[in-house]
Image (tube, one colour):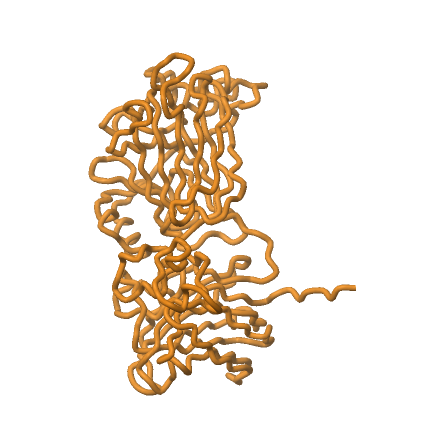
Length: 476
C-alpha cells in the first residue's frame, strides 16, 4: 500500500536463509520491500498482502509476494486470456502504482486511487463519491495482469485473465477478504476460487459489478484450509455484452490468517525468529508476543547431545515427491489428500487426517536450508521463563515408531524440578498423536525427547503446543 518502494538486492540472500529456496525461487532476481521483513506476524493482527513486498523473476514479472508481517513466500502467477476458456502459458503478474499522477491514458486511469473526488487521479463513474463502490482510499501498489510481455510499462490487460496465489509455503491458510478494483458491467462473471488440499474446491465467490474505477472489498468467509486462490477477471468465455474477450482490473489487500479467540495459547510455528546460524531461536504463540526460547539437539551417543542448536521449521504440506525420508511427517496422510505416507497415519487411533502446516524438527544437518528431520534421536527444549511459568495443556507429535519406544515429554518447574513425565505412545509411521499434558501448572521448561535417551534412534516432528488454557466452567 505504500507507494514508494525501496529496492534491496541484498535482502534476497537474507530471505533465502529465512525460508529457503526451491529451484523456482532461485530464479528470483530482486525484491521490492518497504521495510525489513519479519519472520513472524504481529500478534493480534491479520496478515495482509499489500504488494509492497514482492520478488521478481529474470523476466521482470512478479514471481512471489509476502504479507506485511511475514517472510513466508507466496508464489504468484498471472495469465492473459487468449481465447474463450484459454490462457497464455507465460506469467505476466505485475505491479501497478495506483497513486501516480494522472491522467495516464492507455485505459489505466480507472485503476488510479483514490478517485478524483477524493483527491486522487482515479477516473470512472463507479468510484465517485456517493456510489456503493466509491474509491475513497489510496491503495498504492496493486497487482495486475500485464497487457504485454514486457513488465514496462505496467498496464492491465483488457481481454481478461486469471491470477494464481500459491499459499502452500504456509501449509494452508484462512482467507478473509480481498480488494478488487474496476469490474465493469461487461466483465460480469469475474470470480474468486479457493482450493484446498488435493485440489478440492472450497468456495467460489462471484465479484460484484463495481463500475469503472469502483472498489469492492470481497468477503471470502474466513475460509480455512486454503492452499491456492485463483482470481478470474472477466467471464471465462466472451462477454455477452460485446461478444469479445473482456476483463481488466486490479487487486490489493489480500487478508488472511486473522487471529481467532481461542481457549488456549497455541504455538503453531508460524511465528518464529531465527538466529544468525539460520536455525530457530524463538517462537511466540498465536495470542502473545512474549518470546519462548527454543533449541533442539541431535543425540550423539547414549544420553549425550550435540551442543549446537538444530531447531528448524518443516513444512508438512509438501508433496510425497520430496522424498529424503520425510514423507512420514507430511500432513495429512495421502488417504486424506496430503503427502503423508505410513501405516500409522492411514487410519485408526493415530490417523493423520488434518493439515498441520509448519512443524518443528531436530534438523538432520547443520544446513537450515535443508529442513529434514534427524533419525538418530534428539531433544527439543522450550524455555517459558519469560512468562514466569505456564500451565501446559497438550502437544501434537508426529511419527513415533516402535523402535523409538521411550520417547517422552518432561515438564520442569522452578529450580529445574521435574513436575511431570509423559511417555509418548507408539503411533507408527506417519501417525499423529495429541499428547495430554494435564494442564500442569508452574512449568518453566519443556523437553521433548525423540527416541529413548540411551539409543541413537528417534525422529518425528511436533506442532500445536497448547498452554495457559482457560478452564472450562462446570455445567449447572
